[in-house]
Image (cartoon, rainbow over all chains, first blue to last red; front, top):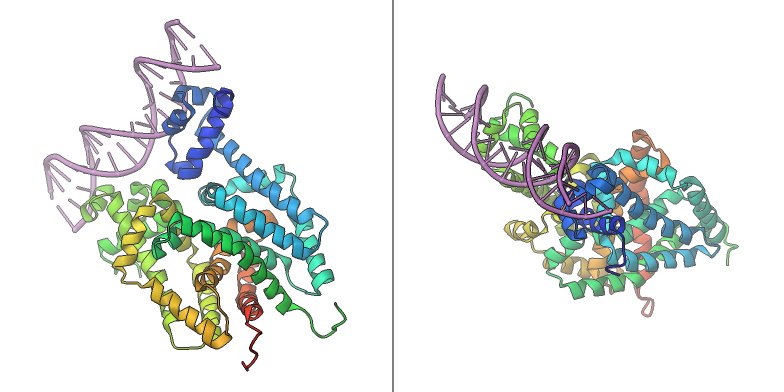
Length: 210
Length: 210
DNA sequence: GTCTATATGCAGATAGAC
DNA sequence: GTCTATCTGCATATAGAC
């Protein structure tokens, strides 16, 4: 895992870490070079400038998270199961790779204009994706609701605690272990929370559903 | 609202805008000076350095949001009403002042070590605050659950969409008007979502509740 | 491809006149 | 208190040797 990589990979690895931790403005080319075990000049040899390097790293991070997300929701399983998969996977993945979320939020904040082209280049189709959720909500739970709200709610319940982690940890003086426990608890609490909430939206005028 | 302020207020106003938009690393003292209609030297006359100015602005932003939050949850009304007040107020306030959220998140990310002292200096007591929610959950809804999870869920459902706004807006090509409509809808959808979810947690072993 | 040395520019901070 | 001019340091980026 150490000496096997070529220089470009070493740079990308280093850039990932530093950009994730510091954001675009906070990151220093020197620090990236140090992490990669090379010097600054070589950075510019492989990537013309900081901007180019950043875009590459951002695209990789975004692609990884979008890919996993789309996969879960495109699978042919009941909505309940999708939600459980979604929560379970994301709570593990994001808690372990929280820098990605910070990174995306920071990138969105610092350079919102970059996003659209990246999404289009990924070949994603957000509308189809939402339509599928909407159909499942209607067919399986008999709920008429804008699927975007449900989807945003799910993302919120998973992502926000990770973003707010330093806040929670500082305010309540939680140790790292206690926070891991907190995230573990959420794997049970959040799916229940969402499914309970959805049940409350069911149309009761025509109770022929099972 | 324009010429009435003294120089210090003008600086604070300008710093608020610039720090909120760019974060600590992205902000430029020159830009703050321009916004305030003064020059850089005067900034340093009023605030020794960038750090000092930042801390002041951060404290103000944090204090404002914490103050409103505590007030709502400390009032002597039923939990249902608290939740509705909370959502309604925050969706209006945060959607209008989204920079504050960005600002706090950025600040947490860039300078997490600053948080603890600020909270302590504000004289806040997070534990008492949670205990109250816990009691109300038990007394009014007969639910035994870690109140921190419920509280985090509420914050998540309100704050996350604001943070993810550029994401949503870019992905689905929503106009600013459409986003305002989206946030308006959430004022109804989110309280229902939360209250439904909570109902699902009720203990049914002893159905003597109303 | 990789390095050392250096150019260039800019941001934070200060000196000192008014 | 407010300004102009300037210092200092650092970060990105390039030149050029090996």
